Structure formats: C-alpha cells, structure tokens
Length: 101
Image (cartoon, rainbow, N blue to C red; front, side):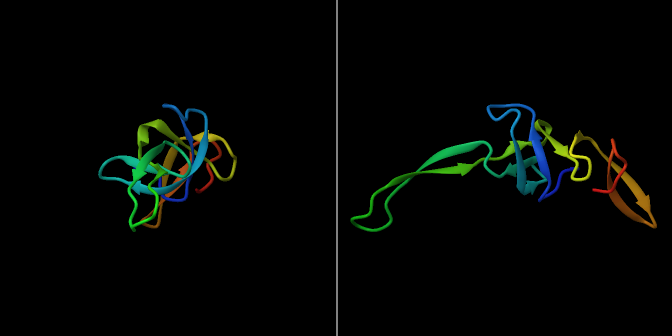
C-alpha cells in the first residue's frame, strides 16, 4: 500500500467525493484507510450509568484505498506514488514533481 498514516488525500468516490483529509490510520491487510472527518457513521450509545442519557455519536468508518488519491506535500497536486531506491533504502517519490514525499 502506497499511502501511509499522516498523508493528505483526496476522496475520489463515495458520498465525500472531492473532499480532502488526513489519514489517521492505515490498514494494509484490508486495503483500507481511516480518514479524519470523512465517511462518518452514526452510532447509538447506551447510557453507562443510571440517570445518564443515551446519545448518538459520529464515528469515522474505513474507506477503500482505491477511492483515495495522495496529495503531494511539495507541489500540492494529486499524484501517483513512485519509488526511488538509494543505497538499499526505498523512498516514496511524487510522480509529477519528482520530489521525495
């Protein structure tokens, strides 16, 4: 998976199409990511103590990696990720501006 935690991404499909956000968590085995403020689902929470009221909480749900595109921090454009091998170290590179991500 070419997208990591902390990357800024553009949502390309779904109800949040066109919005941007920061990746909070990446799940490479499932090929999914958790994006801050995107794909919010409502969850009904029961009261924990007596006399307390139940409430509805919005929780971010995962989104498939194929539905997000990386925004390059250097040039600010939506780009694909390439790799550059330098002294046995694999580095991520922006395909448009050729700068290290």
